[in-house]
Length: 330
Length: 250
Ligand SMILES: [Fe+2]
Ligand SMILES: [Fe+2]
Ligand SMILES: [Fe+2]
Image (cartoon, rainbow over all chains, first blue to last red; front, top):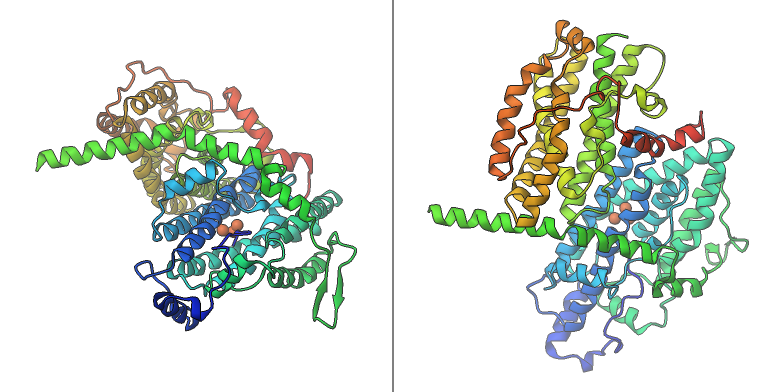
């Protein structure tokens, strides 16, 4: 998942005594792992939180096409070009499934798109970082899709049916993305001196932004507590980040690359690595719009949308004319 | 060089150059479904390139790969039709270019299914499925936008006016083509023209668009005699990594 700091009701989790009978019945279903479907009754806060989260996730898939699209025309072999095209095509498909899942909650794709383009809704901070050398295509697949999988695998069990089903489809494709990314890294890490340098450079730049993808610690957040209770969120940000680091460190070692963290050390007691936190100041800057690529990414999406207006209008007008001709003929 | 080698280059360079152009859209299409469809088209074309240039390299017999041919030849060695290298322009120009190519591509591939050269007919058998789907889409889109709003109609007419002079080249044979036809590898290019014109007329009538009267045709891409200025710029991007880091494996 690419959702960070999704606001929930902000009111904290209601106790059983505070719940209305409807709310209590709803919570019972969630506790029994019965999926909530679009036609079922749901608290307004649940619906709104899900729209924010699914919307942010969908926008991330869409904007996420840009940093990888940046290298499609420079891919070094036909096969790499084909794989990258297939991956970016998948990401657009993920965006589509997710917008469809959001639509079941009563918000249209166009409304969500407007919110993305105006900057009212966010997408993952990771896509505001640039892809500067070919090894970034490896680092993105390995670390960014890797972090996304870490988040999305548990979300296959999320309480909202359409979201859970979208996650199941998406996860299958994400693991292919991660593998192809790791494969690029492997080639680069075993390649010429210049390629090794590219690989290390890509890892140096991507590591902390990848850790930021899980969001700041949310162990005291009322928003997260509510999302956890509703099973919109399954694990805390810190748990996911820890799991990601533990999985990734041996992979980096296998590649012979160095994770840019002097404090990285195995901790026997906790059975995981100790590691440095990313610079959260930088994270909040990026979220506020001051990342290296925020302006360019939003401008690119706005331009695509604005330049495409005549196409959407044209196709709509044609569909209407055709429908009218059909009615007239009947 | 053999007629088969030249023929494979012409097919493979068409799909390579057009696939590259289409891939430039990635993430910038007018609507999400088009992002997916354009990426899919580019992907198919690059996949076909691997087959055609792979066969070309095999026939050439110098131990080269499809990648060597794609990334290490200069513009004068490219054998694509000029139509394929023209810039994307707006979405209408991209889809018009695609339609004009797809219509020819499908006729060509259909004919190639009965090529006497088995390796050619095998590629054609596989590629025709993809190309038919591309054609269905590009034709529907040309019709939809031609017969859409005043603005979309005007843009599609402008696209057709700009691109039509590049259609004729697809049907003009040189010595290599004649040798391929004689060997039963490929059809006589001129023989495809009537079917193409009929299909084009039907589509443009449905799209409310007017085919230009002037049948003048720009030529030189398929023979390598003279490409447009656009191709060189495309190659600087496409070939950059391979050129900057020779001998590396990716
Ligand atoms: Fe994705
Ligand atoms: Fe992704
Ligand atoms: Fe992915």
